[in-house]
Length: 113
Image (cartoon, rainbow, N blue to C red; front, side, top):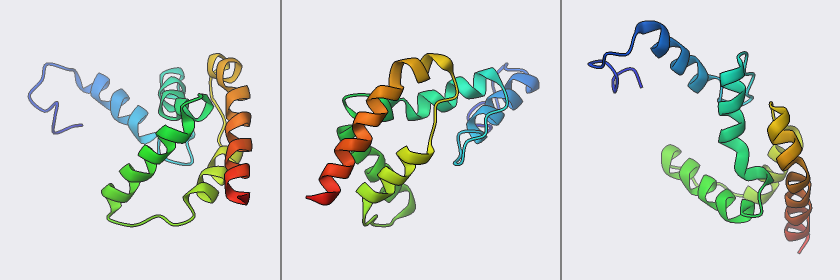
């Protein structure tokens, strides 16, 4: 991010805030500002949607490609993640919590098949 913006007119304080928000999305997320909480929720937004099973496979592929690994037991890893992650804004909690519970259920079913 810093290299990308090195020749821009963006001030150092703004760049520092953007960098901080990005770093706060690392797991486990511990966002300290409102903007960082919004960004963290955006990062995991898919976990509460009806598209979770599809997007979860894309997340798996991204992790595998970035790290040059093959993830085994991805459904169990995902289930563990959903069981421990939470939304940081009331907006996402209200909008996505029920969907996240449904996705936990769907993962449990698919693991037991």
